[in-house]
Image (tube, rainbow, N blue to C red; front, side, top):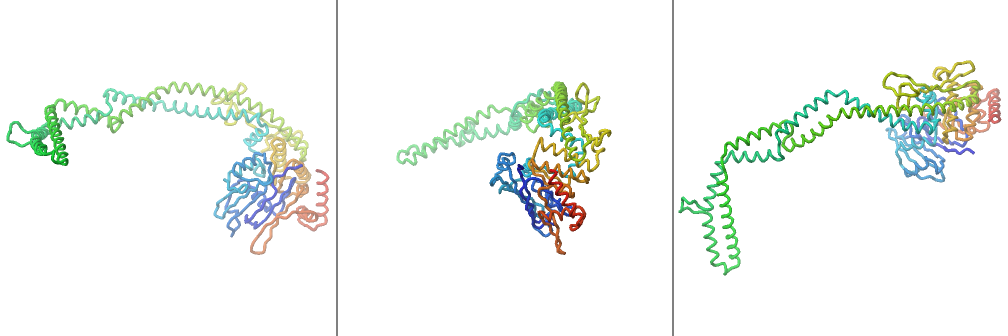
Length: 581
């Protein structure tokens, strides 16, 4: 029984769509309609639901916003359900509601399970819910890089494990090589930097500055330069406080304070307030005596020493040379010297570092060579199985004699390579392998790259075959194919429809198609219709059943819904599809 994912999409004010509901069911749903309408209805809307780029031009002219809502059935244990619940979403009976709103100004909002979420979350959920494939994916399959990615995806853990280790070693090699390159190419600049640092450190070491020495010397120079004025001022102050022996009639502060103290001391016992004042006057007298003594000592010790002053100024000049070059203060100079010594040690150790980097680089190259060989072996083994499975699918798609193979090779190089299989080869972030998908469309035809040897119809069938193989090895619940049958017609189109119907047995398949042979195999047929009242064009969607489906297939076959021949052919297609599933 098919477990379906996408139940319906509701679309409002998107392009020419005013209000439409696309109801999807388990199995195979075909979407047809006028050129481009089905694609706009389904592919663009689903792309918005899955976190695709929002373009304000998608909003219908005159509308404020476009809204796309989707009902998705999910397994509550699935990665998508767990991730949605982590974001705060709520599931109702296993149904997840997703909506995307795009304003006419270009702003975009997303909601999952009733909770506002970043648009990026929609893309994360899409990886586990829906696989979208269109004509651009076919063109992408022409590129060798996409072919390698497809092979790696099919190989699974056999490639994923070694590739993760390889990628880590590759990134480390890039970093090591860049550092080695910088050290070796800038040897001259580093040598010049080391010489300058060495000269500066020697200059600082010769001067032997002490922390705070510049401040101390500045104060001493100021004092020595004004020694006479300082001595004269100290003598005058001392005489004012303690008296001048040469002037016995002079009045000094100590004598006056002593007199004041004696006057109040005699009567202090009569009033406590006056006693307090007497104590304070006594303290003043002691303080005056102490200051007078210190002034006398200061004057005796102060010496106007021109020799010392010269020495101080000379030392200050030497320190000034350091502060002009290495910092505003001696503290800054000492900090520079500490940092410079560390940098010099680093520069002097570059030769050792270069040797270490060279050794690590060689070891990483050897490790990458071993991992690249492991990748080659795993890819070669998976390529055989993958090619065989795709070839078998092509037989079911009206290409019974076609054969698909993979060419896995490496390009030899004389420099900057890694050794794989005893040869030096070019390597990159994904290994050393060049992977190319080859197609031999019929017996006797040499295998050629599909970019050169496959027609449009053949490429469509190869793409479908690849996706069917992926569905068996790495399934997702829902597949959307956007005109994957382009370039296919006749019997091949019938086989494409039959193969899509078989795929729908294990997954939900939605196909936007223009081929009646494909649409006839669908379990559900939806038609996108446009109406025009002369002023406004609107689009809607309608489920085709019974007679309506026959008429739609007739239109697709002959462009005439009422043609008897077309109707007979349409009925024949439906009967053959029911019998040939």
